[in-house]
Length: 302
Ligand code: GDP
Image (cartoon, rainbow, N blue to C red):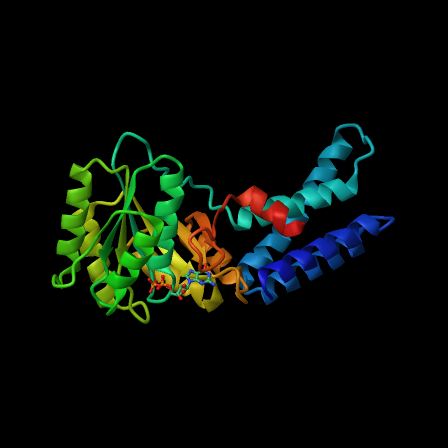
């Protein structure tokens, strides 16, 4: 189920609740059943869905008990259930850790990692444009020496976006390119230096070794995993493997404009306890949306 459909279905389930004349266990059970079915069909991990169900039930019970203890004042059961559902949906996409935020007046190095085709090169340019617009002098370094044409692609994107870039057609060592590029731009006092690394077709040791070596050389302030939403449930395992080898502090989920279900990416947040910072919503340079848990869930629920 794509994200828009998931939103519509969650919205529908909560509407059913609003229409019910009495909020009893049967109504709550039906709501949770529908919510959980929708989340599962969107590829959210089974364990997370089951935890959500238990947590909502516990929260509702506790709130009602507390209200009773506090003098039996008439409590709006619908609000209690709606709030518990909302809070737990937010918790699904909120690992409770703050991502690194680039600071003005210093050089911030960001490094993108991920599988080939996830959207790294595209996302790096989108990010550079995003920060440039907010007053950060931004630039790009292409440390992808694995994929033929990677530098050309970055160069083309950067030129279109008027972002300075660094790369090489002759140097084959990605660590050397990354180091030289970052050093050059650091000297030139750029605020945000974004290093694009190479991917492979799947997570494999050679890729991880390369990422670790580049990371040690450029010491990024934030490593960002670029995760393709269209890989569904595989997103969880993939992000876990990347986290174990090349620790990252933020996730950008790409291709949410297509037929991606999105639930796999949501599960990746819990699996790696890492926040999503942006969503890629198209191929165009402007198709990047900032991600924050509460507004995302509010918008999803319509
Ligand atoms: P890389 O191998 O990880 O560097 O991936 P690329 O940046 O080359 O992207 C692979 C393909 O995905 C390209 O055709 C991009 O235009 C496309 N792409 C990247 N991000 C998005 C997105 O958010 N939405 C859509 N629809 N396509 C995207």
